[in-house]
Amino acid sequence: MDTFEKPTQPKEEKPWEPGEKRDTQAQKLVGFFEKTAALDFFQKIAEGTKDRPSFQEFRDFLTRINGILRDIPIAKRSEDGQGVFLQGFGENSEVPRHEDKLPLLQEAYEKSETLEREYIKYFIPAIINAVHLFSDGNGRTSRTIYLLLENHGSNENFASALKEALSLNGRLNAIDANTAFIRGDLENEVLRRNGWLKKGDPPYQQEQLGKINSGIASLEWSELDGNYSGYEFAGKVEELSIDNGQYMITAVYNFLGQERINEVTEEYDVDGKQYQTISPKKMMEALTPNEWEAILDEFYKLIKEETEILIDVFVHPDQHKSKDGKSTLRDAFISAIQSERRL
Image 1: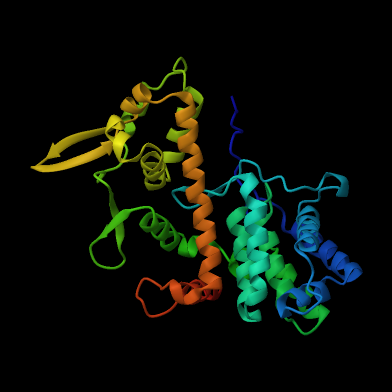
Image 2 (image 1 turned 135 degrees about the vertical axis):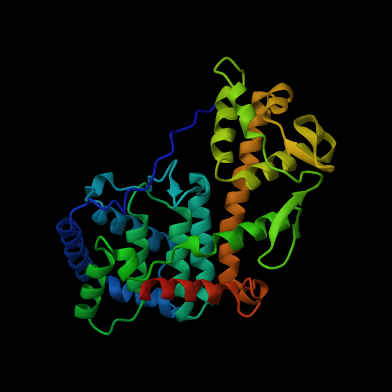
């Protein structure tokens, strides 16, 4: 039986990291970029020239940049983002499973060749943020890649911009292609594609999947104990449900289907209205350890699908409109990034 690694929280934005250390990292990167002609390398990516670097070359550069940012010796640098999650204000967000990260990044990199330069410099950093390939420094790596893809006119201007982007307030002082700006839109698209019905006026909320029109009866998780045969997998489902409830409901529904979903749901009446909710107690009675594991697999398919939609937002922008319908979601995302920097 597989075991789960304890999720790790990215450390790149801890406010107590000395500013002097960030300045030293920026200086090291500038020296590295000068030695490797990195500006020319990334300009070939941005301009889509015939000798555009391969994905493997880009991947190697990415790992070297992240390693320098984290002061990791060359021999120990790696794509070590196993078990990372994103912590935001009030909730945590999952990122794709580690085995999905490189394929998603490669898909994005190869499709970026079809985009205009103006969009590539937002697109690739956004995907780096979305997949979180490393256990630390993903935000700084993303901001560095943005600067490398932008045309600064001189090495001096680039060095100044890099120092600002890597500072303790880098997220505020520099362009930060943080997918949190549109995560709600991406999540709604995933839910819609997986059968949820939307209600009300824009911005729509996805409120019902089949007969399920309520959440998960979270208080029932208290009945979960260490002697339960599916304890490890059930505990992971409980953990992920806290901040990703609708995705977990979708994962349960997608795995069990309409024929079996009634085995794990509970109906109740509130003021004459019928509600159907997922019952962890019934799940514990009905599911085997392998079925719990299969539900987790379904959950991470949805997380992967969210990143795939993000890719498509840039590749086929006209197919993804903003909440008000006045612009593409791509343009709304870029506008939000730029507005955040001006605050």
